[in-house]
Image (cartoon, rainbow, N blue to C red; front, top):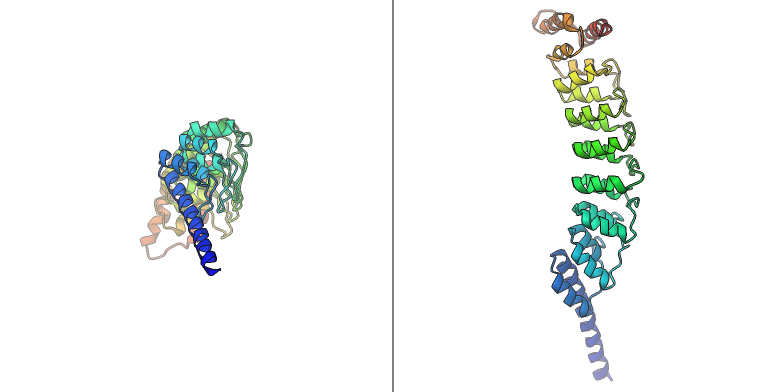
Length: 320
């Protein structure tokens, strides 16, 4: 009896081992773009919908990630499921295709019925994924086919937030043309302008200003874009924001204005900002005098200097 059972068990063990190997070979071959090998494996029993052990990637998802439209079509012809999602982020074929930047593949998947409005587990649209991966052409294409381009992810980030963070002026222009809400805030209260200022990106700040973004919007820490410009010690960005009307007297949760913060950070050339403001030139010498006192026997307190600076600013900017 044992002579019969043992060979059967051995055969079953070898059979499942071979199946596991052929399926693993299929995943690897798709990853490497070996289409002929993939076809041979599928013809000899490989599962077109097998998943990788860690992330749950199927051959279709891998082909989408690679931007390999020919591979994807071949897998579809042999029973591949286009609607599977990975285990890690809940991303589908369209999300992975967006990360690859292949516009032809994106178009094909949309023709097959996939939706550009579909979110993954993080709330990201395919449009968001394209922007995060700096796939500019894919982002432009998806901007045209996505109805709700202002949709925000789980962190409250919209496509405009992400494009600003990625320093992508082309996508920002497209989104602004499509009337995306430039004043949308994320979970931390940041607008796209906050992120542009955090990156010290003057070009992005200029673009966003044309969209009607609020210059003095405060995030949950009470910081405005001007606060971040000061933190970056960016004279050009500070000057631009002030010239456009940003208020330097707004206090954050630490009770710091942009002016007092500049003093705290020892930006001794803060007076250089004022020439950007119309008719503010007369106060230059007064501001210089405040900082010259650093080397004198008696030094003004930071609070006093900040108050005097704000008073001077208020006096002269009111005439601009």
